[in-house]
Image 1 (tube, rainbow, N blue to C red):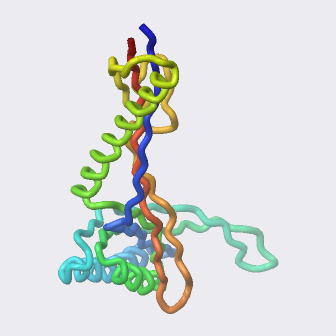
Image 2: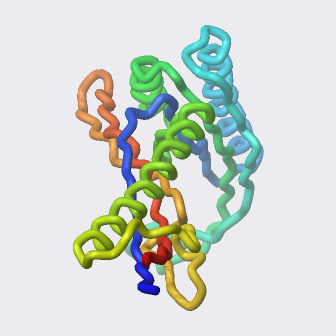
Image 3: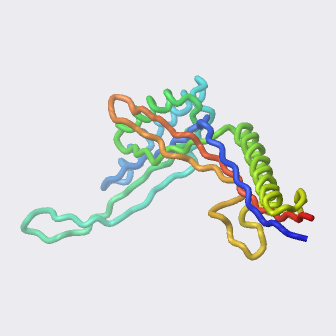
Length: 221
């Protein structure tokens, strides 16, 4: 009984529905109290703005769950006639993440906070809503299975055999003694977002790519 081993693949591109912006507030200096006060002040402003965006519905949630505080040694040269001297300095800060559903409000806010002293934008992660992601994953998994079935049928017909019957199906990376094809059974890729400078950043995220890969064994008569 002939056996056919094939793979199936399906891909779907979907516009992102949510964006999580990650930023860090940092202050440093020679006076510990001053450093902590400046970091707390800027952080408080950023958190207040994040909360306001959640209140008006532009964002769905915000978090600030990481705090940084440490001392470090900096070597300075007080004057051309003196050698370098070590100086103890202090640094403090915290991270903030905000999940936006309104991308225009996101672009406006990023432009506003990016000019604040001590604020750095660490990046934006584009996402789908859970319900959308789950629905698309179900679709691409089904399409991948149908693609594998169609491949097996094509091979069987070309060789003059009957309609093949499925004997086993593996998600990518789960077939024994065979490595993955480059990722998990279903994957979502976040594409880059273009940002054009100006008074306000213009964010143009590319679609998210969701992919499913399977391998399957069929037997025919």
